[in-house]
Image 1 (cartoon, one colour):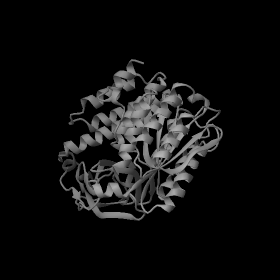
Image 2 (image 1 turned 120 degrees about the vertical axis):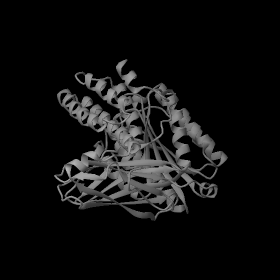
Image 3 (image 1 turned 90 degrees about the vertical axis):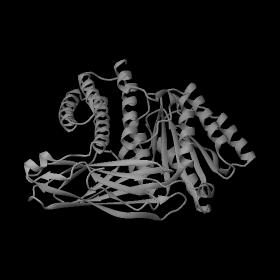
Image 4 (image 1 turned 45 degrees about the horizontal axis):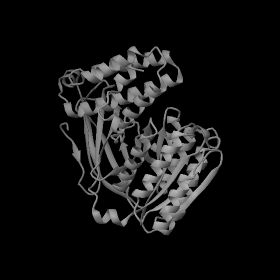
Length: 445
C-alpha cells in the first residue's frame, strides 16, 4: 500500500484503503485512484451449521433449451439436489411463456429429495421466455419459507440460454427489482448457457441482486457452475455489502470496478454482493481533483456495511479517512507511487475498457469503438509507463487493431465474462478456462 494506508479493525469484514499517489497538482485535473480492499472473516463451523440454505432453482424451459441444454440443466439441478443437506430447503420452478412451480419449498428429507429429482427429470421445453415471471415465482417461494425460519441463506439461481421476450424485459427494470429484493434478504445469481443468452438482462439481475453471473458455453459445464455456486453459497459469511465514499463536492468520482453504484453530491455508494470465508474484494474509485492551494488537503472518508449470513440487521466497520495534498507541478511530478497497488488499478481499469468495448461492438457502433479504444489506450499506456504492465498494454493494442469489424458472440462473451471476473475478483468455475488466454481465443474466431 502507499504512504498513508488506513486499516479498519479486523471485526467481521476488515477494510484497508489507500491512494496510488498522495499528491495532486494545484491547478486541478489530477487523476488518482483510491483502492478499498475488503477481507471477509473466516467461516466458523458452528456458523456454517446454524444457517440452512433456502434455495430456488429457476430453470428456463423455453423452446431454445430443447435437447442438450435442458438435459444438462436437469443434470446440474439433480447434482445440486444430491449435494444439499437434509436441513436445506429447495424450490424448483420452470418457466417459458408460463411458469410452473414444480416443487414448492420442501425440506430435503429422503422422500422429498426423490420427489425433487423426479420433478426435474420430467421437465420438458415449451414456448417463449418469460424470465421475470419465473424469477419472481422463485423469489416468492423462498420468501414464504424464510418467514418460518429463524436463520437462513435465501438464494435464487436462474439457468437460462436466451433473451427474455415476455414479461419484464428491460435490464434497468430487472435491476431495480433485484436491488429491492436484495434489501429484503433475497440474493439472485444467474447461469448464462451457450451463446444466445442476454448478458445485459442476466448481469442486471446478478449484479443488483447481490449474486454472480456465470457463463457456461457448453451444456456439460452447467454442472460445474451450479455446484461451484452452491459451494460459494455454503461458504458465504457476509452479503449485501455496501461501501460508501464521502468526498469533496468539487472532486469528480467514478467506480471503475463497475459495481452497481448510486451517486449524489459528495457521496457515492457501491453494492458488492457477497463474500465467502476469508474472501477478498477490491473496489477502485477514480478521482479527478479540483484546483487548490499547495499544502491544502482534500479528505475522503470510506465506510462499509454488510449483512451477516442468516441475519437481517446491517453491521458496520469503522470509517477510514484518506487525504490528497495539493502540491506544485514539480513536487507532483517527482512523487513516487505504490507499484503493487497501481498494478491492481491497471488490471481493473483494463478489464473495464475491454467490457465497454464488447458492449460497443455488440451494438455495432464500430466508429465509436475505434475512437474509444484509441483514447483509452493513450491514457492507459501513460498510467502504466513505469509499471510491469506490458502484457496489459499489448492486449489493448491488439484489441484496438480488431476494432473495425464485428466480433463473434462467443468471443464477446469470453471477453465479457473473463474481465467481469477480474473487475469483481470472482471465481470462474469452468475448468477449461483455467489459465486461458482470452485474446488468443478471440483472434482465432
